[in-house]
Image (cartoon, each protein chain N blue to C red):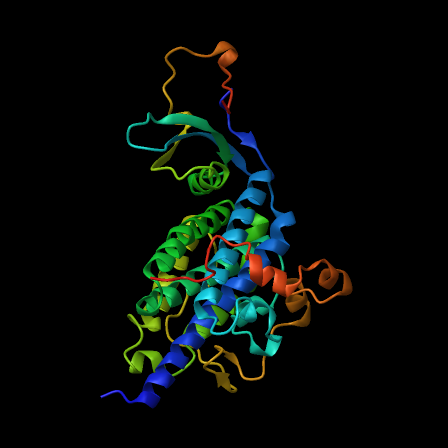
Length: 276
Length: 80
């Protein structure tokens, strides 16, 4: 029989997981924003712009769903130490191949996490995210298939560290508290296997000469913060945080006053809320 | 001509894009995209022609089109 305190703990576990999802999408959107001028053709800019705005859209919808106080608190009222994003995205891409691989791993891993939380998300929000996610993965697949020889060489240097970081984000514990509490749909171990199968298949199709992927868990040493899915005491690099929430004088001057923003809500959500 | 053109280190193919907004509407030619592979062509079609909520959207590779009356000089205008 669940007690009131176990209900509170379960609610917190789910909220932390959804924040990991939202914050990772928030950072990923800024990866797309930063990489946009590095697109190789005009069409890449269009695709990257679409990926960027859709990731920001998912982020804001998840924020609105999770906010318990006022709208905008999760975007503007937190410090880098409170962000639950994937550490994989702390390290900027070294080249085009690194960008494509890392974004692909982040997209597939966030989708696996979202699917595992499907009993805690509004159906239409998960459906919309899934629909757009399909095209994000297709774009990244398309870029992977058009790698040139130099890209394939670059990929070899980053492949294992990036894949390992993705696996650690999804599975870095002997046990999953949400799975144990019956709050998870499926398991994240299965999710990791699906991603590795997909990446392996894509590698064969794209002609990558990369190491064989191992499916077993590779737990990191050191202390792991389960709530944020990051190493304890790790936080977003200052430059990345400044890109996401600029604090320089001109950015602050240009930002609309918070009360005005709260009042007129330039959003497609008329009530600023997501409901089932 | 319908020969693939060269982008930065990759060959690009042309694809014609068709869409339908409702079941009583004909499938209309929307324009064209060029991409190094089909996956990117699909993404480009979806992101470029996203002005409506299509009930059907598809692409056809120009190399798969059967010409009946060839346009003058064999050229096709991409966007209508």
